[in-house]
Structures are given as C-alpha cells and as structure tokens.
Image (cartoon, rainbow, N blue to C red):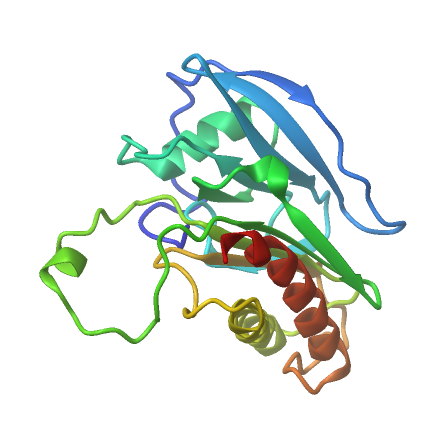
Length: 247
C-alpha cells in the first residue's frame, strides 16, 4: 500500500492487536538481509506477514504506508490483512504488528489483501526481489476520473508489493531511480503475463541498500545501469511468477 499520512517519526499506538506469531521461514541468500515468513492469529483469523530484519547501516526508499520516503530503516514488514479491510489507520495497525514482533527502531510497513504465504522471489547478480501479488482489482495508471475513483477508500490495502534488497550503496537519486526501474519491470512482467493492466491502485515498492560512504554510493539505477538492470530482471522474474495465476 502506498504511503499516506503517518511516518516513523509519529508515535504509534500498539494497542488492540492480539497476535500469536510463528516463524515459518524464508531462505536467505548469503550476505543478504534475512526475511522471515510469519504465521499469526489476529482477531480469530490466520494471516501471514514477511519480516526483513535489516539491522544497522541500511537505507530504504519506499512508498510504504508506514515509514515511507528515504532514510535509515531497521526492518521491513509486509503484512496480510483480510479482504474488506475495515480499519482506517493502517499505519498504526502495522506498528502494532511490528511491536508484537519485537521490531525496534524505524521501519517500513506494507499492507496487502493478497496471500503473503504465496510470495514469489527472484535473484539476479546479488539483487533479490520478493513480491506478493494479488491482482483481483487491477487497471491502468492513467485512467479517466470516475465517481468510483473519487469515493475510493484512501487506505485500501495494496495488492502488488515489491521489496528489493541490494548489496551495494545507492545515492539518493539512484534510490529513487531504483523504485522507478522496479515499477517499469513490474509493468513489463504484467504485460508478459498476459494481463491488460499496469498494476493495482495501491501497489508499493521498497528498495533497501547499505548506507553510502564517502563515495556517495552508486550514482545510477536505471534499467541500463549495472545495478538497475539487475533490479529490473529480479523484479520482472518475481512479478511474472506471481502474476501468472491471475490470468
């Protein structure tokens, strides 16, 4: 779900979210931030979420509803919620889930109605893309305004969430470019999967990379740059695998 409203600087509420969580596991590549698939019980329902415990020295550029923007992040959370999501405070809800997981410090939180346990992942040259794809509500980004659009719930849970991890530092501009590259690759994958759409109204992207040193990090992450090309191929592979069942 794309960012709106609260940031990691706002004090979260950690009340009203009773969670019993069990790690199911997600294999990590050597040297990468580890991601865990978690199984939780919330309000009598069985739901899943993915957790990346990034540790110190990692920056994230994201459109996440919690902790969006560019800055140091200690964790990323991609949480499944029920269809017909009733809450109007998804940022606080994500903070509650993070608190129940013992996640400290600033983080980025994504939300989706898709089945998180059906995640797909792809690797390319040290880049990993992990995707949860639910494409029941999809369309084109540039579409005529309608009364239905105007009445849309602003905090509707997103359906295509992309988390990209890199082993190299990126400059600020390259981080933003990486998000654009991941989005381009997502659209290419959706078309290659035979879907007539550019995504869903509330897709979100997170790109995590080490903080840059004195050199400022890699300056480019467009699709023809070395690291941008790897991002594009990894995202394309993961989105294509997740989108094919929606045909």
